[in-house]
Length: 363
Image (cartoon, rainbow, N blue to C red; front, side, top):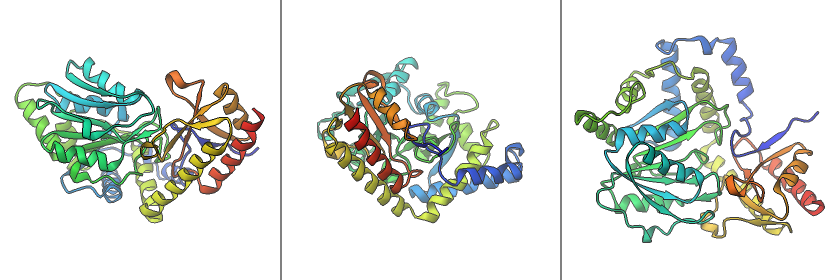
């Protein structure tokens, strides 16, 4: 029986080298080592150095580990905000960050557009009291991507406000200038092709200093996973509680694999595969590209409207050992989502396109 090829937006296809790295990890008993040991410190340090090279992080950045990217929403709101945030919302996940701010009794400002649309940053006016601007580079629910230049432009206009970027389903594809970003975060089960259970928080010293000020003013910023505690442990390449040691080890290995391949090559291949997928969706009768503005189309999550029930199409594609994702939320039955992550090759994308052509015509 042929193995299935996953084009789901998360959990996603496992990176091809992960199985081998996992075998080595268990042979070397990596899951059993202490997070206070020199062996773990070496793993953490290597992961940090790899991530720093991939993203070209400045010297004032830490790489911290959480249980998920969702947890980072809480950490940012508790540690870096006294009262006011500003949220650019165009889908379910960017909206959820806004909802978290409400739950934590902050005063969030909402700038929302309809699903499938991006933002005109020249029309965005952020109030003076806002402390943190929250943007999503890639909205997983809709396949809308915010151009990197627009993210940088917001920081240029509002240099004194913290700018944080959700890269959950796009890291490590976008080439952000981290001198114009104060924090970013992602989960490993998407574009990094790892099993779920690990969030990664890239955060600079400006955020740390804000947390320190809030703590000095009596604000509760959390417990073990408050930013000041995470940073203190990071300086020793340790974590406050016992982390997902296996996940961090595998991340160190996959990031090294990506570096060995070449980050530029990975990004060029991602664009090549995205072009192929969008061309296919645009030309296959029965499918339509959801995001109308090409400048706002995601490279990594291609969303298509379907004629008829999407579930039937997804099942027919699955019968050919190709697994694609359903639409999200209100669009579950009328859309498909195709992940375009580094774990899937150009050849596999070409196979999927041929299957889609045949399947849609027969649907």
